[in-house]
Image (cartoon, rainbow, N blue to C red; front, side, top):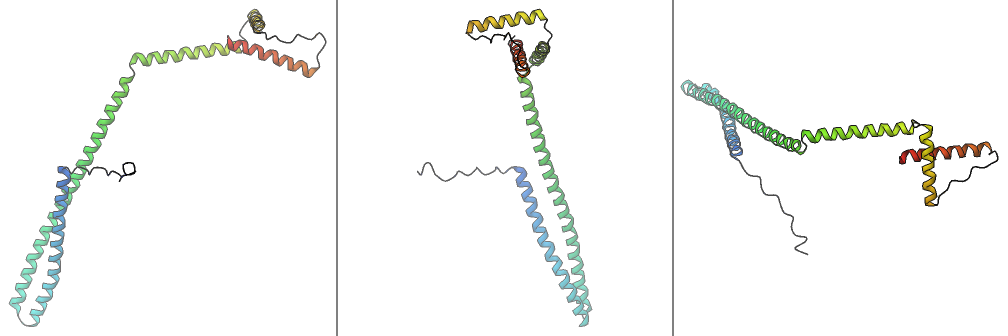
Length: 205
């Protein structure tokens, strides 16, 4: 039982490519820069409040130093913002390049499959198929003409005689034609039966 109902096999993990590593590294670096940016952002608010408090205390020099420090951190934040934009751009370009590569590979596979299909039939094979189709259509048209009554009366009489001969060989004979006048309904039914016999003969021909 254990060998039959064992644990389902999991598919092998996807192979990590150099492209995947590059994208992952850039995203991790971007996340670190975002964290640093948020820290500097909090410090700006804190240092501005400290500068206000120092001015109230009359410590102008210390307040000026605090504002200079705040300005320096703002410049760092500007550089971080530009770097994050560059990283985002690079990630987008890498992902787009990978997408284009995947599309090209699928197009290549599709082209190879199309060529393989085209190799299955040569031009000669296609021409033969078209010729066979044309001959089949001509045969069907000829058969339709026969069914439409294109045979002469002599041909029809000979076909009926051939049918009767075959029926005699097989022990199947048509009923004799009555000598007396049939009622209208029976006469119509007999006429239809004879017409069906003619159609069968035409089909078998």
